[in-house]
Image (cartoon, rainbow over all chains, first blue to last red; front, side, top):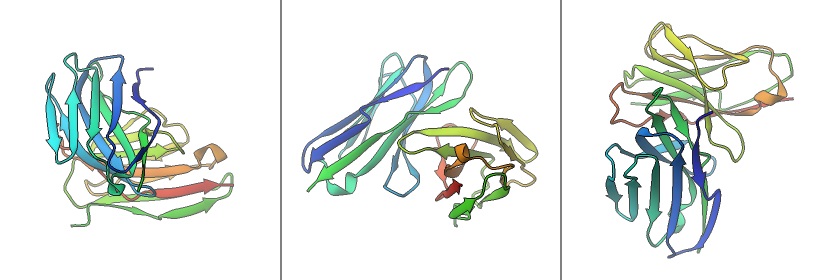
Length: 111
Length: 113
């Protein structure tokens, strides 16, 4: 079935290094949302992107939505130990309005 | 304002037993959802509801049932529990409008043995 793919599955960085996770869909998305889940916690909504080519920033986090509305990325500048967790993208498929979550990228940060 | 509240937080079931996972929200959200999350995996939609009295199947509905008699409550029923239903279950809610993300509950960790 239609899926939203997310890479990488895991990323281990040294504190201060940058981090990027990518989300790709085989079909056009109406919008895309990003969530963060701390270890043992529940997903927490970060942001939603709607427009083609949209870029939004939240402090050290930069979110982008591709021009074709089929891909998105989350970039964290100068990671901190508080950034540890799993980052999920979730896209709404335009053809059936179903929301599909990516499998997530698990980020670990070494102090 | 408690948000989305799930009970219980943990449960161990024997194969063939049944149980109901409770979910309630106090944000007057119309939309509510049940997801399951298996280790290292994303979230799979089990059932969802767009309002009281209306429910629909998601990606993985087999072995589950739901009801939505009020705006606030959206219980998930497991009949004849199987080991494949061992997972973490999250309830979520959202406004109808597209500019709002989902608010998730803290989850129920279920083990079927």
